[in-house]
Length: 529
Image (cartoon, rainbow, N blue to C red; front, side, top):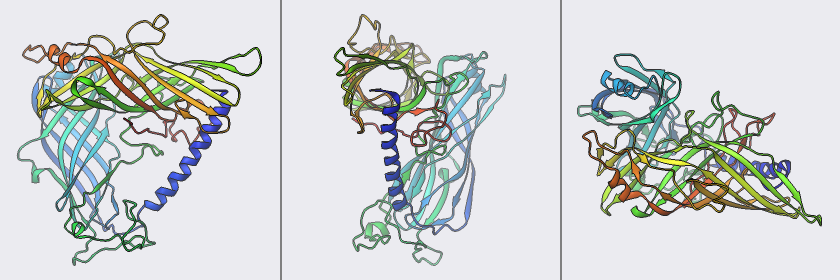
């Protein structure tokens, strides 16, 4: 916030409208003309999986259903519809969850789908969410997840095949009184079992050829190629077909859909106020994403888009005695939000441990105390500059670990001993360990702001020390605290997070440039290094 709310929001909204118009023009130029689809095929298959639960490996059945076109034109997206993933968890797996004092569960599913066309290949992830479900006292449990999934666009003629691969469940657990278990989430990784029908094949779609072997050409007005690249002939909608196209060596394109009436990336989690986090008169929400370096592993972990719920404070102005300007101070608070919990969604990072062993960790960041956003700026009523400090006490929890592809049990309570810690410019005023991120924004009256502002977002950077780990142990009692501490913990790890445009959910009327129809942030930022 760099000035009176109305002035800043007017500038932000004008910029957002301009961006929306530009995006519409690009979209209109790249959407293929109507064509090609010939009939619908139904997918309905039961696949056997082997899943790793806290007590060990158990068999589980995953039923996948969807509707797909039988045939499309080259460059026409294949959009799976009515996708449902149903998982039957066996009784021993349900008992594992009950042992954590869980009485209810809500799951997010992730199905890896391998896509091949000739010699070309691509990967997609079909994601779904379940409704909150009570755990039975005994016996198995059935969870049904639904959700939009990525579209796939074939880049050459020939059959495009989809095949089920790895499967995972992120289980959010609640106790009988509605609180969170410890740990609050459990990630279950599953692999396709031997003997799966047709190797897990889901469907095949014919791209660009009819039954006689001829080329199927889109009808309607010509459109530019999906890549947006000009054709060699200069004729719109008629991309040059080189030998690689005909032999199927151009990888199919995978594109995530947008949620809830918005243009946001579907991979972003839900970001809405609810009964546990009700909106107030100054409520905002926003997505944040970015990278965090891990110096010891000479790599960076991508933290995918996560939600923050912000209660904006009123700005305070102190005018200079000579009337040439003023200082502006604003203090706001915020909470991480994922399925009614103060945490990020689970995210994965893969590094080369000891410079040669690929190690993949699934982690979450959990908020352990109040998160504050303090801004201080000066203005001469024409130019305004603002420095903002975000302070968040966060512990890093490791929920699962794979070393060279082999799962390594880390136990249920593997986490950093204390909060991540950054140098604080005002340690006496803000004691204790917490992450500190800084953003600076500037704005000339009547022009778009640059850098970071609370309302319009932007880059936030800082350095963080990762504390030692505790509670990390295998089922056999082997202590892994020292291994993780030696591999990961240490100071001066650079962090860069990008906050997107906020949605002012408390407005009398939602701004369509900022919010989707169901009051979620329309803008999902892209991570920057």
